[in-house]
View 1 (spheres, one colour):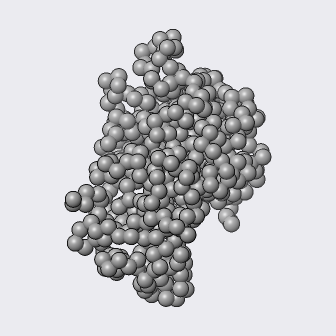
View 2 (cartoon, rainbow over the protein chains, first blue to last red):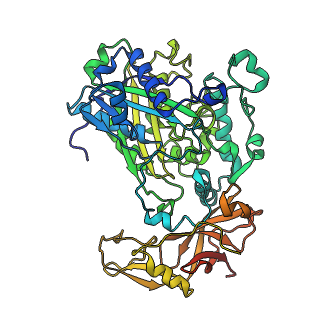
View 3 (tube, rainbow over the protein chains, first blue to last red):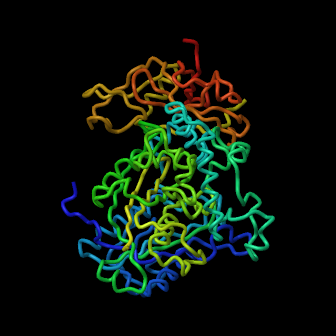
Length: 413
Length: 138
């Protein structure tokens, strides 16, 4: 496959979030996507001690030129890959290649998305003035947004493997348990405990622990998906800096090494999804594992894009963490839960922490937090680390189970 | 009542489909080189990359591959909730999306994947007859 093995050719040397994530508008602060970007980049620069002026490569979903201009920098590596929520894992893959091949030393990957504050404002993508031929043949049939499509995959999974709605509900329940450990999580606590734990922040009426029955009884969105099978819609920004090994070792922060990286895709339109119970994560993770010389059995934890419970279950199977059709069991049997054998989505996930529309950056920030060994110092107000992990597989999923990016990350001992 | 839901736009690559739909025929694109039917209509065969494509009249029959029940919708579709959306495996190969008829959206447990389905067309405007699929007896 690859002529050069890029493994360990660069490290994530720091991660940060923007300041006002969640529902800032409710606190009278309408934050723009650009603000999220700039806050996050500023925060990660301060965290790592790497001046913004040292950034040579800029990676974002279409924002790169505007960000560089706004920051007053002139990078000589520009990447605007925008393929949905996994774009950021793919950016790290591209940054690894750019650094390991000697083109640049320092890259920033940035994300800012006012998913809540500017909800309904429409995407920022440039119009191509025509509809894609695939969309022409599906637009008549009354699907609206991601849940209306992902539900088809869940039904097929249930048909093919005998999984049940209850099985998937366990993913929501366990992920909510993790959110109870993250004060930045939107679903951190319920209103009754809010005064003690949240200070001035508005408690979410849906926050606090939930049960399988709560998930089943929640408002139906697209059967079999109820509200609690679906991710949040919030504001969020984040950034990570990727640097060459010599720089990574010289910083005050701890490096998280990129041992493996891979990306792939299956389709754009769900109409072209051959197997509704599989994604290209099988391919992107195979590439990443091979580069790393590690396999699923070597992973201490996993961070898996959970736009919906079904996304998490299928992806766990694709990453080799569970047999085909058995993905839900990782959560149902407690493996993925706090104290379990294979902690998954330790920040509370897209289901209960934050999900701005493209969640992949939150995966990166959390991976850094858990693996860097510096998390006790707090990153953006999240204190403590929940695992003693040294290896983590990170997988982003974009579109309608369309695109994937996988990273195998390892820490120094 | 006037059709109040989104109406697909037409172009050179799919005009024969809409012309056939007007006459109640399910026209499908097929590659003359490898002989495979593909859906949606394309500029190039996704199997062998020949650009020598033709249109054939399909049987209008297939099987239910998977489905979902939509409870949240907008525009004209909002008046229809709940309704069942589905993917259909065509007898000729490849897959089509639809809103499924002949099933009870309030009893999704009773909807059988693999069920036999047949196409029917609704006139949306002078140029557009939109295909929908209905579950039928074996």
